Image (cartoon, rainbow, N blue to C red; front, side):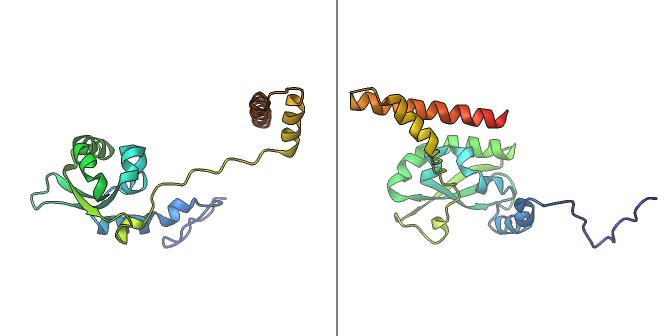
Length: 177
């Protein structure tokens, strides 16, 4: 016997839903209010333009002309870095258009700011680097025991580090198998 479909206003979930699905509509509406039709430009800025330029710039606004061709992307940049970013404009336009899949932007406008930035510039879109995992105490003891017979301090530290890395890597591959 087949189950009746749920009423049209209700959604049916099977298990957990990713957090990105819960926030997708809010992120899209916030991005569209600033002219960003593709929110990937905001969330994946580092991957799109590269780590060096992402540290110096933040996308702030996308404005479209009346005829609809070639939008202007406004970037927030510190005053000291503006000349360098100015030289990179053609490469930025190329990369952003590659993200959109067509010639979405034709111009980049730079808004220079103080090192502390405006309220919009203080939001960090880039993820923080992950903290290195703490080594297992047994692995630390094995590494010290392996290098204990070496008299040179620098060589002993290098051997301990090598042993620790080897033991950690081999333990992680055993868990994955």
